[in-house]
Amino acid sequence: MTGFVYSEKPIRIERGEGPYLYDGSGSEYLDFGASYACVPLGHSNPQVREAVTDQLDALTYVQASYPVDARDALDDRLTAVAPGDMEHVWLCNSGTEANEAALKFARSATGREKLVATMQGFHGRTMGSLSTTWKSKYREPYEPLIDGVEFVPYGDREALNEAIDGDTAGFIVEPIQGEGGINPGTREYLRAAREITADTGAALIADEVQTGLGRTGTMWAVEYADVVPDVLTSAKGLANGLPIGTTLCKEWIAEGAGPHGSTFSGGPVVCAAADATIETIEREDLPAHAAAMSEYLRTELDAAVGDGVREIRGTGLMIGVEVKRGSNRLLRDLAIDHGVLALPAGRTVLRLLPPLTIEAGHVDRVVEAIAATMGTKTEPGTEAQS
Ligand SMILES: *Cc1c(COP(=O)(O)O)cnc(C)c1O
Image (cartoon, rainbow, N blue to C red; front, side, top):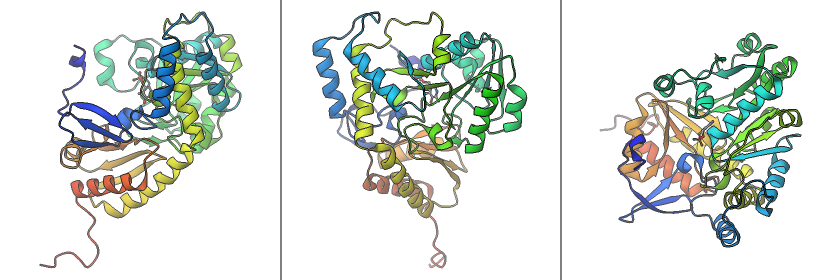
């Protein structure tokens, strides 16, 4: 029984197809959180399923010390899509492990201890990654965490200048904060982070576990700022629902990476799934599709929602709707009354991370549901007619 660490959810899902999930009674739900961004191609994608079943037939697992085609193919594809000259790939099983490796590599490659992270940032829940995660609710029961982490306000260039110095091993940052409420970093901020880390010899670690793989309209969110980090982590949607994470590194980081390792690193089945996922994202040009759907979604939302909304923000298909009252009731009403599943980000933000394959009709249904749940905009001259 693993359920005890998760709160009880009333909807028991039995089947998924494309952007839809189905419960045991056949009720349909439009999954506009893509199950925490883990299914960028939608549920039960045929290309991924075929790659996985073929690989299962050939070889389920062999220890990582033997080269296998599926792992080599994924390595090649990852280095091909990685920003700039990030030519070294570490494979693991989750986002927190990818960040764990990133933090270890930053320390070993620089020979320094200090780590800098951002307030409201989220990097995972194992000891190292948790030490760079901001929320005290996640941290306190497990303290003491690892030493030497300093938090800076997200988006504050001056604070970065002060915190990062010749003793800093690395600065870990999400190009857009996800769990923290959908807070986009500006181009200037990300460029400043690149300059300050380069000047001091610290590693810039971009946590793209949530933002990566086309979600923000480009393959990686750092591309928007023309920034090539020293380390980039990805996970969540990387194998369209199977567990995988990766830490992409520049040469100087890989050279000093040290004796890291993991038994299930680069297992052939998840590698085949990830290779098929990235291949499909590229072949179908899903980053561009995400950008187009984003524009449509934002325009329609802007026009439909009323005074209950404080702000709509985000990039691509990573959109936060900040509401005036709490988002919990709203999420419940969307799910139960309208069959629309979305995600929270903090107490007041409704987070939309749909599959990148959605079409305008799906957007229409979600906008209608949100407007109905929140109360629509009143057109001037139409109020108080009775
Ligand atoms: C989800 C997430 C993680 C943690 O990934 P897990 O696979 O849950 O360990 C790390 N960083 C970011 C930005 C995330 O969104």
